[in-house]
Image (cartoon, rainbow, N blue to C red; front, side):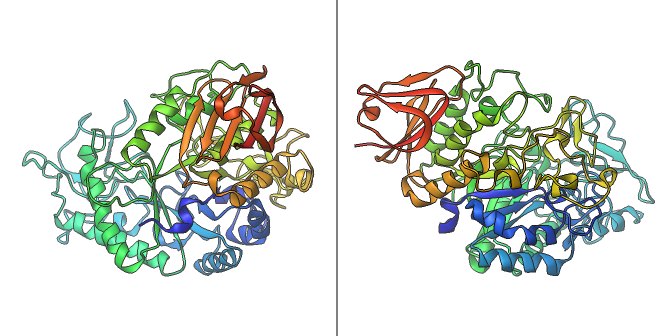
Length: 534
């Protein structure tokens, strides 16, 4: 049973490198988050999701973990994290950590031990090794890039990676073994068994310190030979085993996957599906490709664009499919994240954000608010390739990872370090949005977000558990929440009119640029409204 608090929660994602720096090294830290907890609480969120904050050489921004049980020194200490958990709890906020379990860093002690060996570990290899030259053979890496890396140490052969060369894949076994490929351990072989126990140990370590749960990176990449095929059943069953264990020791622990959980029968291990921002369903609503394109992207006009040439069809097809499978299942939707354009990208203006936030916070999901989106921070093109941000020659994630903009002081209040020492440059626009300039200001993006989240909290029908029924798919986009509330948004520049039985006699509860007429609702360009219906 999913923890009751999570079904109606709002999550706030913090990229820790870029939130607030308190020791003048140019990189955000946990004490910076502690100092800003009152600000976070005032947003009206229920949980903070941190991108990885474990010890790492940061080849891939912390998604290359060197020690799962130690906070990276640049962020602080384990005690700092426990203090943050306690002080956040005092404000009604829970802490979720990002957990990377499909691979580690080459700097991890596990890998270094196997690298120094002359052959397989008698207790079972934690990683996947071959002494036969794999050439361009089987792999799961980016197209055209070999997935096997030559051993740089005493151990002969090659190891399998997950992404960058410095991210060796952990061995959770294979669904199909083959004597000709002895590196394919069975799922119950010693190496995979050791890793499953290590995963439980990591979860136990942090949950015992008050962490509320985890967002799991590449959750269904564990069993490699099914990762690129339909199903991913064996990986899902590993997580079901983990959930059975959690039910006995940490029954309220929340697990969120990167993506959707395979349907394998029985109780699901994860508490939600995640409509990832880098995939088409979410991207068709918001992505203008400012960050570039990945191999699976199809350039298109997003629905939330002034031109009004987009469509909700791709998103609704995914949503309705997931809802048909399980009407009670929580689904997470994000404003943006560390791998994607910000909500405000390209030519999207602050005026256009109201309709987008109204959709994201009233649709019937568990919304995730990416730090800085609440003030309308921009995606910044052309940022330097810091910590693996350019993961594909045509795709730069750094523009969504720039420092939080607190005020109009040096470095926008993020850090007292010299500008050249900052993790990434500050938005150079002299009119860049800041918290200080918007705090308490009527009509500001920050005020809009706070008011909208307060409305959500005060109105059960707008939260995650009530059903959502689409009234109109185009411009305007309109839907019912439960039987009592109608939400209408017009993301385009031209006015739009909703004529439907639900609109007749509707009373405006909250919104901007809307007029109720005898036959329906008229919305100005970029208008939005939440209505009580008779």
